[in-house]
Image (cartoon, rainbow over all chains, first blue to last red; front, side):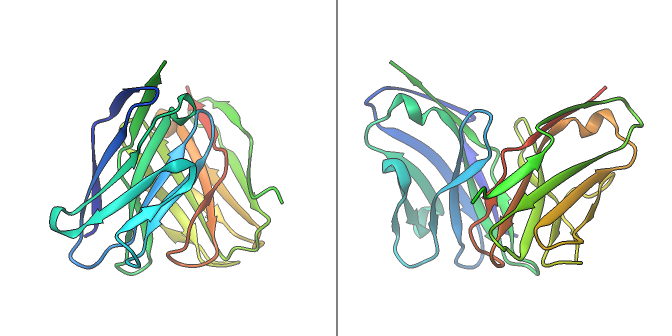
Length: 114
Length: 112
C-alpha cells in the first residue's frame, strides 16, 4: 500500500537559508505525490503536486520538489527561507486501491529564525 | 467565493454529549471528506462522500457518523463524545477522485 514518511518532525533554519524538507514514499506503482502547507490556525493548502508529467515540480511561494524514483523521494526545497514560511508541511501520496484517498505523512514543522 | 467553511471553530464537550460539525463548500465539488488531525499523526480520514446522498468509511470511522443530504454540505456527528475524540477536525472537498483537495479552516474540539 502506498505511504509516505517524513524525516524530522521539526526543521529549523535561519532567514535566507536553504529549506529542505524530506519525504520518502512507498509505492509499487507510479505515485501521485503532494505537498501541503498549514499555516498557524488555518487549514491545509496545496503547495505543489507530482502527477508524472515532470520530475521537477514548481509550486507556490518559491517552493519546488523533485521526484526521484531511484531514491523513492520527493523532497521539498526553497532556496531562501522567509519568516512567512514558518508553518507545518505535509507530504501526501494518493492511494489508488479502490477509492483514491490521500494518505498524509506525519508533518514537519518549519521554524525560521531571524 | 468562500471555498470551504466549517462551523463551529471551537467547541468544548463533556464526555457523553453529542454534537454536529457542519462543513459547507461553494465550489460545486462532488467529493467531500472529514479528517482528524492529531499531534505526530498527520491527518487521518474519518469518512468521505462521493456525491449527494452517499457516504463511506475512511480509516478511523468509529464513533462518528456523517450525512450528505445536500451536495454543498457534509455533516459530521458525534453521538456520545469521548476524550479520545479531542482533536482538530478538517473538512475538505475536491472536484473528482484524485483531484486537489481544498480544506476548511478546521474545528478544534475538546472533550472533557
